[in-house]
Image (cartoon, one colour):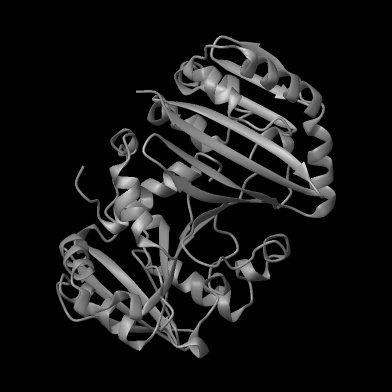
Length: 375
């Protein structure tokens, strides 16, 4: 499978994680950006977004993900976000003289609609002056005309026309650059920073968010990992760290909710009604989970479905294993157990068995979603 563009790859990856409730690229070993100019990208992200993907490692996107057996199955949604820059990105990334890793050390992408198209996202780059010049240069090389400059709340916005019909709006500060196909989204970025209404001003998010060290891809979605556990109207966020291998991808993290809500969610874990039928298993309560997994492990022969069960933790408070082909036949039947996005796009996930486990540990709810490729 040939390498995808950075932008298209980002949207594909966001779709994978939007299934959990809800491009991106960056570069490993990026220590040479001026430390004094490093900014928290989340201080610019509007708090009303529905998800944010953050990364510091392009290798996971450009190599591991694209080489996986299941990648082509997920390549069902098209996006043109920065697609026009495909040749430029590929050539610059392969040319060490441009030294990406010396100038850009963090990238985030915020999503502002459940419809995953280019027009609904904003890219954020933590970068030095050389990195900004590089990004502007790439856009200029595909732009139809010189950029038009406008001012919003005292901030300069550069607007490029590309392909005679689309526009890319760019906003930059010291150590930071943001771009989007939608000028109004960039204006919201300016507002979020100036009005202190960014995600870092959202108490539920800011209290739980922590800066990752290196080599990570994480999506933060405005959702509970399992919908039936969340209180209606509560500002709930979930963290999903992404991991890949050739046959499986999985997402792990915690729920970002006020402590009182997390306690109620933990109580509900023990009271979910368990059931089992062909190609689906739902089990709640640590004793029941332990007993169920132990019985499966004791069998000498396993189907792939049973293997997925046996790989879950016996210390989990809640598990669910389901063949996504079964969900695709009656998606609304599973709406309380699976996030909205996965219910609305079940056909994309039919080739997988989905395993979910939720655990309550020291007052925190952690979760793991495992997608196992069947073919």
